[in-house]
Length: 140
Image (cartoon, rainbow, N blue to C red; front, top):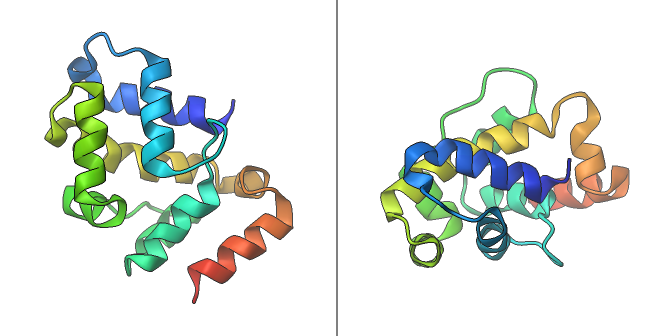
């Protein structure tokens, strides 16, 4: 399954009843704009790198490993992704910002975790070269 489809499905699942009749294509487009990526694809390496820029490297490291995942608070969502960007994202989907932030706070750790165990992250970031590039950004 491609990362954007997985992210879209997870986001809709985390929204629960707040999702209403959201179209998955609209959600995928909005997620792509919010989380970064080209040609409708999600760049997991770039997403993880945002956490090092926001001084939340240990948080992302917990999701990359096979151990327990640290919680990602709504305040941290707004810090990493940008409050105005999350506001635009939720407005574009026609949902409450609090619902969007809550769903993102659950979806992002799960997405990274599911794609980082047993070598899944290597595939997601384009092999060893992509991982090396991500790591260099992550530990600056």
